[in-house]
Amino acid sequence: MNRRKRSTGKGTLAAAVIVAIGWGLQQLGIVDLSSGSSSSAAPGNATILKAFADRRSDVMVEGSGAVISVLPDDLEGSKHQRFILELQDGATVLIAHNIDLAPRVPLTLGDRIEFKGEYEWNDKGGVVHWTHHDPAGRHEGGWLRRGGQTYE
Image (cartoon, rainbow, N blue to C red; front, side):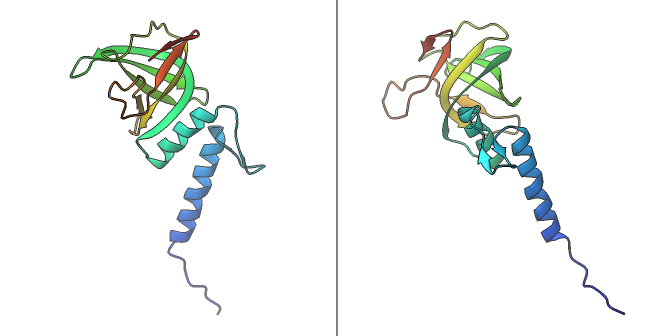
């Protein structure tokens, strides 16, 4: 009788995880598995999605999205205007905009916001902060843009 050695499943599990991640990235529009190329629909947003998938922080990003929730200001320490954007791919990210250093952005639900800032990973989609200039000049500045008006 010819018996095969039974696999522990680790290799199969790893392959399944890689396939699932690839499928998920394709669904999010980051990669096109049929051609092997990256999507160019929203290159800035793709950087955020990759940082989220890799659980990376301290990544300067640019992107855009629609305001889906306006949250109360964070008043502990430096004051921050907070709102959630839905990116083109359906992912969400919290924007924490320092209003001690930059003007408040007038917001309504559905507004398109472009942004540049530093991404910090969390399990809810992450936070983009440093959306303002650095008065000390030690950190790359960011900004928010709504309707052609830039807030930095």
